[in-house]
Amino acid sequence: MRDVSFDIQRGEIFGLVGESGSGKSTVVQAILRTLTPPAIITGGEILLSGKDILSMSHREVLQFRWQEISIVMQSALNALNPVLSIHKQISDVLYTHRGLSKDQADKRIRELFDLVDISYDRLDSFPHELSGGMRQRVVLAIALALMPPVIIMDEPTTALDVIVERDILFKVLELRKKLGFTILFITHDLNLLLEFADRLAVMLNGQVIETGDVAQIGSGGQHAYTKKLIGALPSAGGKRKKDLLPQPKSLNFGEKPLLEVQSLNKDFVLSGFLRPKLLHAVKDVSFEVFPGEIVGLVGESGSGKSTIARLIARLIPPTSGAIRLDGVNILKSERTTASLEYRQKVQMIFQDPFGSLNSVHTVFHHLARPLIRHRLVPKSDLYKYIIDILESVELSPGALFADKFPHEMSGGERQRVAIARVLSLQPEIIVADEPTSMLDVSIRLDILKILANLRIKKNVAILFITHDLASARYLADRIIVLQKGSQVEHGYSEALIQAPQHMYTKQLIAAASPGWLSSKISDCK
Image 1: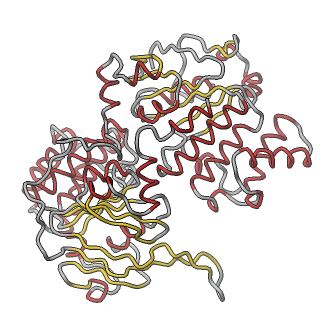
Image 2: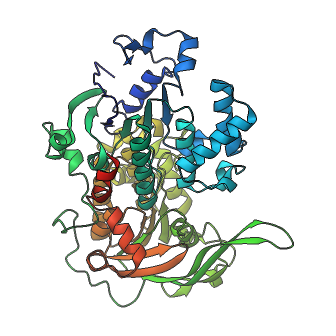
Image 3: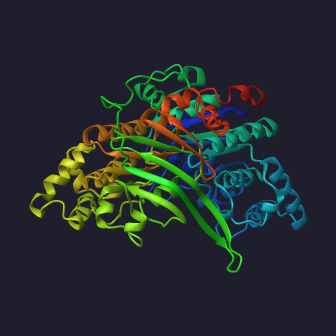
């Protein structure tokens, strides 16, 4: 981070946007005085109401946090203590900073729950017992507990599906109008900020490269990187842009499906031995995927998308139903575990590229191990084969990346490695489970282009699982919409976008389209 300067006016929403590694979170840590060694602040000042935060003593810093400035963090599950109830976590803030009695704290907690629209019966719940959106509301309630004049929101909705994300943001805007606090909103999604921020700054490589009001930045800005962020990925609504992703010459995929999912069901036992409580995660789902076809599986968190991915990849067994590959019901032919042949034909790209790679092994090791296990390539040809695979997913020179460890690469590079590992086994179908959700918007399109080219060059089928309807619109040939474990609608991508039939599909499209907040913003600003 070098020579970063910006100012935030009282009561405004100021956005700080940039890709991973641009310095956004470092700025936040500097403001809160939470930078850890070896990071140090070598110069400058941070003024809050005229007082320099950097000159405060440790005791003063402890007092100013939460009372003068608070933060809503990106991952609510990580921000909350898993072994403490929600009531305990909020009351701790009130006891520590205000010295309230139990009755006073309970009254204040109920006021906070009213503010963020959480039912009182959730007071004694633990974080894992709440949905993602509800956990984020709890973190917001903690940030508001002492009514600080400034709230930092560090990627507060990144892990949420689009409908829940919009609900949380609208609630934040309502509270801001009611309580009058100032917001510093950190995100990598510029198009999101353009909907509700007053002014914003764009960061790149540790520097602020552009600052301006929303109208100035929204019209294209001055810097080439700003223009790239604005056009990173079109929306789910509106007129379709042409030639965004490569398309095959023919969309005739034949009459014989490669993969058939028939009446698939999956129940999870939540509690109880004699009278177990069941969660019906997948309910009577059926669809087909043809050779060379890309099918999008779209829905909010908890809709059953990832469970279906794990069922098809044979990572978990179904409760009932059939999964046919090349016409064979593999749940009968391979009852207990999947064969090596099935593992080779059906490969999976996981959501978190860092979590799917072992941090102690090089890229070469990650790609070599499955090849050796499946005996696909002679050892004498292994190195050249891996280099060629890496370069096919735009990791050039391949020899340089082969020797790298996961932590030495960016998120986009790690996801390319994950794709290369899958591609190396020459699968017939790839199950891509949210492969772009952990990536910056500026590189999501790059990953989508790689997937689009895969099906053209290799004729590989792809089941593309996502909550991002815009990505599914441009990548998938057909889209299947899931809600609460059930199929509610399916159809050809553009036809479904232009004429959705189910109310839930209409809500998804509206929430993912420009101007989603325009009808409500005037009431909140």
